[in-house]
Image 1 (cartoon, rainbow, N blue to C red):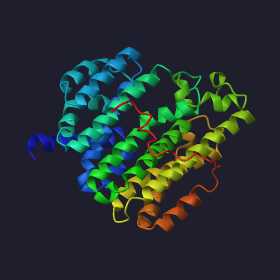
Image 2 (tube, helix red, strand yellow; image 1 turned 90 degrees about the vertical axis):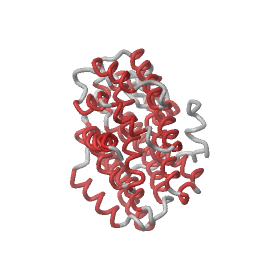
Image 3 (cartoon, rainbow, N blue to C red; image 1 turned 180 degrees about the horizontal axis):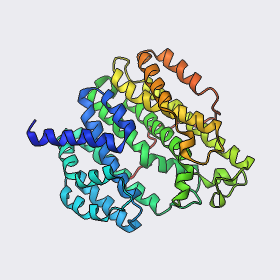
Length: 357
């Protein structure tokens, strides 16, 4: 490794902790052969997300920068020009670490382009689908919510399900034993991503509402007599509570699939299992807190404590090789959550509904 590439890798490790405490915690659990690739993939997704989240950019500019970034990842546009164009336009409220990430896009991309062909193709596909998908949903965003569950499924796919597919591609490239289960793992990976994303959507309901967005499905709430466009934190209606409970049940079913995904990873791959289990465990505990406090008015009210995070890490690490104990642990953790039957995912879920690679 040259001094320049070592410096790029060191920057990646440093900035990862600034833009995501969760992934900065879970990625180091992965085998050394996966850590750098997964960390880099996360930063690529974070750059795409920073474009989407910027409050000062109009939708047309966001779409243009999203397309430009796709070309950067694919090696068809200079990363330094992308950074030079975007950085001065970032809103003042953009967190400093995200500003640094945009400014140093070229360093991140140099790491990207050092991976093998399979890894690069997986990352490029993910960024392409995510960036274009988020731009599409930017045009639809409003406090009136998404049209229905199909729209929510699609949104969750482009922001999270496709990440699950990418991670599975990276895991399969790393391990022949995991690759042998690719067809089973990929639909579960999409469901895993949706479970995590739905948990975040429910937790961040009022923060999103404050900035004029809502990712809840209108049809689910209209069926209970609730108009999302007039929803406020003061809303206390049995119809809202019931509809919210339906979404909690659906999210819980997706997290059940996440456990199935994790248990299909060979027990000897303890690092990959921990990576999955820690994210899953924190999501289950968050969903449980949301369910117990459906009248919350801020995501902070349903954020799990550091003690809960530490307990999740310790418990899952102890049981990481035992499918039986992990099933029991997650059954106990989610026993109070509502249940709802979710149709089995077809084998091509996600890939079949995605834009062409």
